[in-house]
Length: 141
Image 1 (cartoon, rainbow, N blue to C red):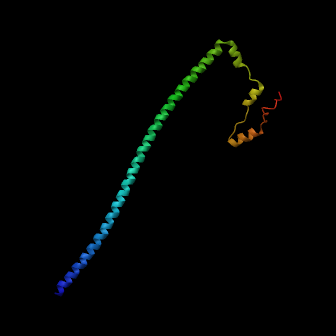
Image 2: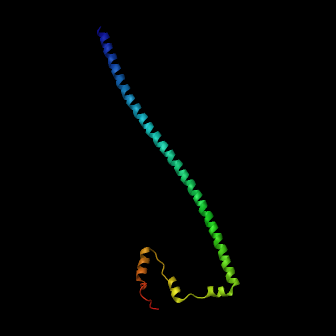
Image 3: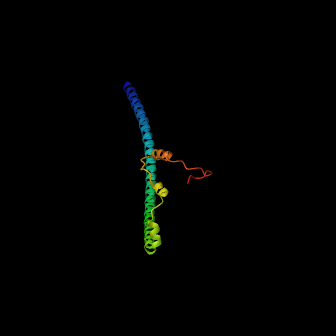
């Protein structure tokens, strides 16, 4: 009888150990399922981001192509205008004389300014220039 009781106690202990082990394994399984779900969500978000980036890349490529076409068109228009200007200078001696004439000194001076390395350099140069008279004041010339 003692042997049966010892055997029953051993089996009860074994069942208790198996139940605790089962509970631990269930906990590990639930944790693994949660990690799987989190990874699946991250993967889905990554796929969406890749899709969005591919769409943006396609849009930028299309915009770049449109800009290149516009640049090409603008260059052609500029070239045709320059050719037309050259033709008008060649055909009309009065226009040629006007185009070859020197600008007045005051106008030429507007083009004289140093090269600036920053906006602050430009502001310093600008503040050092002569102040223009107000619109209510007559000019000195």
